[in-house]
Image (cartoon, rainbow, N blue to C red; front, side):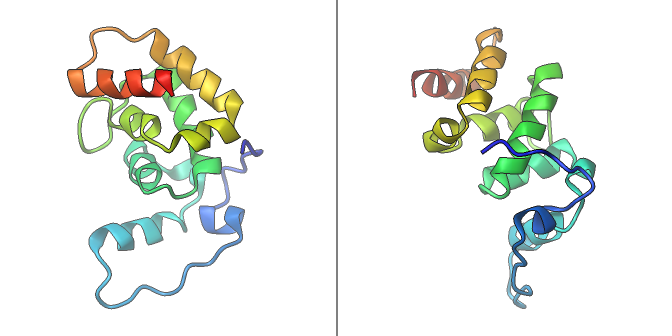
Length: 131
Protein backbone atom coordinates (compact mmCIF):
# COMPACT_ATOMS: atom_id res chain seq x y z
CA UNK A 1 0.00 0.00 0.00
CA UNK A 2 2.92 2.37 0.55
CA UNK A 3 3.96 4.03 -2.67
CA UNK A 4 6.57 6.64 -3.50
CA UNK A 5 4.96 10.04 -3.07
CA UNK A 6 5.14 12.59 -5.84
CA UNK A 7 3.76 15.56 -3.95
CA UNK A 8 3.41 17.61 -7.15
CA UNK A 9 0.74 15.28 -8.51
CA UNK A 10 -2.93 15.09 -7.65
CA UNK A 11 -4.78 12.02 -6.46
CA UNK A 12 -6.46 11.93 -9.85
CA UNK A 13 -3.05 11.74 -11.52
CA UNK A 14 -1.56 9.30 -9.03
CA UNK A 15 -4.53 6.96 -9.10
CA UNK A 16 -5.01 7.37 -12.85
CA UNK A 17 -8.71 7.66 -12.20
CA UNK A 18 -10.75 10.58 -13.49
CA UNK A 19 -14.04 10.93 -11.70
CA UNK A 20 -17.10 11.82 -13.79
CA UNK A 21 -18.27 15.42 -13.80
CA UNK A 22 -20.29 16.44 -10.79
CA UNK A 23 -24.04 16.20 -11.04
CA UNK A 24 -26.10 19.32 -10.42
CA UNK A 25 -27.33 17.90 -7.11
CA UNK A 26 -23.90 16.93 -5.75
CA UNK A 27 -23.52 17.54 -2.04
CA UNK A 28 -20.96 19.96 -0.66
CA UNK A 29 -18.94 17.00 0.64
CA UNK A 30 -18.86 15.34 -2.79
CA UNK A 31 -17.98 18.60 -4.52
CA UNK A 32 -15.20 19.30 -2.01
CA UNK A 33 -13.75 15.79 -2.32
CA UNK A 34 -13.92 16.05 -6.10
CA UNK A 35 -12.01 19.34 -6.06
CA UNK A 36 -9.42 18.09 -3.58
CA UNK A 37 -8.62 15.12 -5.80
CA UNK A 38 -7.41 17.63 -8.40
CA UNK A 39 -5.02 19.47 -6.06
CA UNK A 40 -1.37 18.34 -5.77
CA UNK A 41 -1.15 16.16 -2.65
CA UNK A 42 1.73 18.26 -1.33
CA UNK A 43 -0.65 21.23 -1.09
CA UNK A 44 -3.32 19.43 0.94
CA UNK A 45 -3.96 20.82 4.41
CA UNK A 46 -4.66 18.83 7.56
CA UNK A 47 -8.36 19.49 6.99
CA UNK A 48 -8.16 18.34 3.38
CA UNK A 49 -6.48 15.09 4.44
CA UNK A 50 -8.96 14.59 7.28
CA UNK A 51 -11.88 14.95 4.91
CA UNK A 52 -10.47 12.69 2.19
CA UNK A 53 -9.21 10.00 4.58
CA UNK A 54 -12.56 10.04 6.36
CA UNK A 55 -14.18 9.23 3.03
CA UNK A 56 -11.59 6.52 2.23
CA UNK A 57 -10.32 8.51 -0.73
CA UNK A 58 -6.68 8.20 -1.80
CA UNK A 59 -5.59 6.21 1.24
CA UNK A 60 -2.42 4.71 -0.30
CA UNK A 61 -1.17 8.25 -0.90
CA UNK A 62 -2.71 10.18 1.97
CA UNK A 63 -2.06 7.88 4.92
CA UNK A 64 1.74 8.26 4.60
CA UNK A 65 1.30 12.04 4.46
CA UNK A 66 -1.04 12.01 7.44
CA UNK A 67 1.44 9.95 9.45
CA UNK A 68 4.15 12.52 8.67
CA UNK A 69 1.92 15.17 10.23
CA UNK A 70 0.93 12.97 13.17
CA UNK A 71 4.56 12.10 13.94
CA UNK A 72 5.23 15.77 14.64
CA UNK A 73 1.81 16.74 15.93
CA UNK A 74 -0.38 13.79 16.99
CA UNK A 75 -3.26 16.09 17.89
CA UNK A 76 -3.15 17.99 14.57
CA UNK A 77 -6.46 19.71 13.96
CA UNK A 78 -8.44 20.27 10.79
CA UNK A 79 -11.72 22.18 10.99
CA UNK A 80 -13.49 19.89 13.43
CA UNK A 81 -11.59 19.43 16.71
CA UNK A 82 -8.14 18.81 18.12
CA UNK A 83 -7.05 15.33 17.02
CA UNK A 84 -9.53 15.07 14.15
CA UNK A 85 -6.86 13.91 11.69
CA UNK A 86 -5.78 11.18 14.11
CA UNK A 87 -9.42 10.18 14.53
CA UNK A 88 -9.88 9.87 10.76
CA UNK A 89 -6.73 7.78 10.44
CA UNK A 90 -7.57 5.51 13.39
CA UNK A 91 -11.05 4.71 12.15
CA UNK A 92 -10.10 3.32 8.76
CA UNK A 93 -11.02 -0.28 8.10
CA UNK A 94 -8.51 -2.59 9.85
CA UNK A 95 -7.79 -4.18 6.45
CA UNK A 96 -6.03 -0.94 5.48
CA UNK A 97 -3.45 -1.54 8.18
CA UNK A 98 -3.08 -5.19 7.22
CA UNK A 99 -2.30 -4.12 3.65
CA UNK A 100 0.28 -1.65 4.91
CA UNK A 101 1.76 -3.16 8.03
CA UNK A 102 4.65 -0.66 8.01
CA UNK A 103 2.22 2.25 8.31
CA UNK A 104 0.19 0.36 10.88
CA UNK A 105 3.27 -0.18 13.03
CA UNK A 106 4.20 3.47 12.71
CA UNK A 107 0.72 4.53 13.81
CA UNK A 108 0.93 2.18 16.79
CA UNK A 109 4.19 3.85 17.86
CA UNK A 110 2.59 7.30 17.56
CA UNK A 111 -0.52 6.47 19.58
CA UNK A 112 1.31 4.38 22.20
CA UNK A 113 2.97 7.56 23.46
CA UNK A 114 -0.25 9.58 23.80
CA UNK A 115 -1.72 10.33 27.20
CA UNK A 116 -4.67 12.33 28.53
CA UNK A 117 -6.76 11.91 25.38
CA UNK A 118 -10.42 12.89 25.26
CA UNK A 119 -12.56 9.79 25.99
CA UNK A 120 -13.84 9.44 22.42
CA UNK A 121 -10.36 9.55 20.94
CA UNK A 122 -9.04 7.21 23.65
CA UNK A 123 -11.70 4.65 22.63
CA UNK A 124 -10.62 4.92 19.00
CA UNK A 125 -6.99 4.38 20.00
CA UNK A 126 -7.92 1.33 22.05
CA UNK A 127 -9.99 -0.15 19.21
CA UNK A 128 -7.11 0.42 16.80
CA UNK A 129 -4.53 -1.10 19.15
CA UNK A 130 -6.61 -4.25 19.62
CA UNK A 131 -7.49 -4.71 15.96
